[in-house]
Image (cartoon, rainbow, N blue to C red; front, top):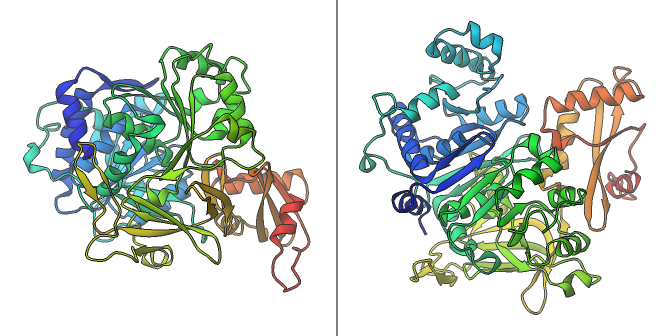
Amino acid sequence: MDILKSIARNAAAEGNRVAFTSRAGSLTYAQLWEKSGRLAGRIDAQMGDNRDPVIVYGHKDPMMLICFLACVRSGRAYCPMDTNMPEDRLTSVAREIGNPLILIAHPEGCGLLGTKTSAAASSQAESSAQANNNAQAELSEQVEFPETEHKVISYDELLRITETSGEAGQSAPETALRGCSGEDVFYIIFTSGSTGKPKGVQITADNLNGYLEWAVDLAGGIQRSRVFLNQAPYSFDLSVMDLYLSLATCGKIVSIDRELQNDIPKMIDFLSLQHIEYWVSTPSFAELCMGEPSFSADRIPSIRAFLFCGEVLTNETARRLMERFPDAKVINTYGPTETTVCVTQVRITDAMVASDSPLPVGRPGPMTRIETDPETNEIIITGNTVSPGYYKDPGRTAKVFSECETNVGGSCGLTGASADGSDSSCGSCRSYRTGDKGYLDETGMLYCEGRLDHQIKLHGYRMELEDIEANLEKLPGVSRAVVAPSRSGGRIDFLTAFIIRDGDGITDDYAGRKTVRSGLRELVPAYMVPKKIRFVEKFPMTGNGKLDRKQLEAMS
């Protein structure tokens, strides 16, 4: 499969079909292709030989999709950053990416980038060019771009470029653009890092195309022109499942924003009118929805399948879903960001739900091999969807990625059929050590048993406890910090931060705990802020003199 060619064919054959809709607006396939082409031409003309990735900042506006496709059609990877990212994290990623070009695909702009809008600001605004100059001046104080001039394109400017066919918005001839292909990086998603510095996972065009070759067979096969739910923000790789599966099959993406997700009854009313057929979310979000009695097949009878990824799907959650949506399939999948969304699938049955054992996470496709380390039970994934590594981070890349050890003569033996019916092989593929524990049963079914290290998934978001700890220890008045998860039923419910104070700068009371939470929210995304804060005099130790994380976990 070639995702760009697939979208182009859809635009040519069914251009009037709606490709994307949210409360912010809609796009047809023809509009998506035409507008992204105009912006791709502008990006290519502006950046010249600079092929660095481009940050796209926004939430659930249709402009996000236009920017994504424009970047890759111009031959540059995109790096999605959601509006819920704190300024420090956005600054860190911008510094790491290093590309002076940043696209603001959000109508309200971005405060850090000097493009935040308001009624008062709008009435006093000068020209668009002056606003961009101000944005660039403010950004330069936050992020140093060596020997280059940063260029922030505001939302209003993006509208002007994509909606006009004159000089400002004229797309380059298709033959003049060299879109991302093969081993070109298609997108970069930053995940939590143990040092407090996020890791940029690079996914190539081959990785994404290889994933889609397999993923179109999810839930028994994705037919054309179906309707997909987009719940996850685009900075979370679960969104790749609904976004590109839909675009590859000429489907319709129904995207729900954060505000709507926080009002479940209103969201159910909205979705009941959209005829959702493939529900893509974390299990936690489905659990949240089940707190509303009307979340059932009676209100949303169109759902064919639930596609879950990102965290543990418990037996109880699956059982309740199967009761409420008896005709829908419940599909469990597994895979880290580094292997392109997911690499296994299994349809959950009544027998699996009734078992005392945790639910399986599935079997891989023909282009993926899963093994476990005989000493540690670490899950190792080999195949054509494994990332080439972390952006500008060869050290951390070398620790977990490797060329396929059984790669002999250009092939490791993994073969499969392409969507067009032809044979495909991985050629040269890579392996990734996931850090997850697990085992394969006698039928090749994979079961995941948690993490080897201190990386966790909470409500679908992957994070490393050391990342939170490192940022806590940046706060004034914090001497040491350890974060422990509270578990029940094989999953993580919340986090507790145990803190040793430095002097009297932080009080041991509610005000002190509020100070810690407020300070941490300035450094990490909200989902990484622990639910509980506990001040302690010292941390428990093991008999070997090491920090006893298990005891702290029992105390959380």
